[in-house]
Image (cartoon, rainbow, N blue to C red):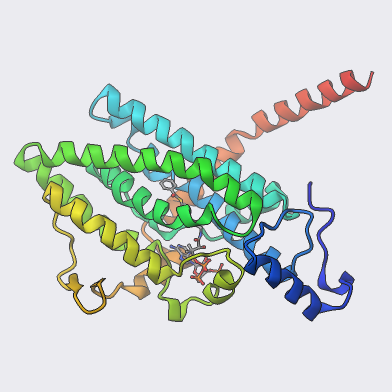
Length: 325
Ligand code: BYC
């Protein structure tokens, strides 16, 4: 563990306000906060919350896609899907490692996921019904993820920011392969075009929800922005995503399933229809169409992979004993 130097407010010279002021001055000056630096307890907790949810999302996010590896339409598509899945698992491990620098153990974070206590992105609790869903997850799901993650490369916590650099490079490839698969579908037969449109119709709203509640209903945004954990608010990122997506959809002949979507000349933004927040919160609470399946699959994989962990620990102990001899 790297974080023995973490200071709680009670141990802080000058007291809580002094710590907050010193800390805010560093954030405002654009400095990176590193694991052994002093930091307010609330900053540490906010990061652990967001980073553990983020890591869990990378891991659980693999399930909707893994479902289609054996049924990919060609060897090339199968290789792409497998490479993407491997990348996503890597992202999860990267972010768990970065979160561990804040003094929380990976076992604790994973325990919270397996017990059903931890949140992960709502979007992964929807089913993938056919191959077109994989194209849409790559194009729009990873497209939304990049919109959120590129600003995280500049977030104030050093290990999180650095972990995002590789993650974003790989997510860009994921978005491209999804768009390219989508172009192929939309260049195809009328049935293939209909599959592409149907998949967008089912995924558009869950993907809009990925950015989280409206700013006015987002309890964590104010401090997240103040501490530069978030460089943009949820609504700002959602708007950036729509701006990037509308021309892409037009290019390939996809209609975005929102009758209220229109460009507002006055604001320069896209007005859009209201998200079904009841649906969002029910999925976040664990009542989405696939929440149960995702956690069951994760628990099964954890139990079936326990021997690998034991073998790795035994090997590490043997190496350590050899080194000590
Ligand atoms: N789903 O105050 P708010 C990927 C929760 S995976 C579920 O706005 P915050 C990929 C939120 O946690 C990439 N819960 O929160 C992988 C909070 O609950 P708590 C995933 C959500 O943190 C495989 C409450 O609602 N990306 O790319 O300021 C295959 C109030 O929200 C959601 C990340 O994780 C949601 N959609 O902002 C393919 C990015 N939205 O903790 C692709 C990192 C909100 O107070 N995370 N909640 O109980 C973030 O940027 C921020 O945490 C969020 C939410 C923008 C998601």
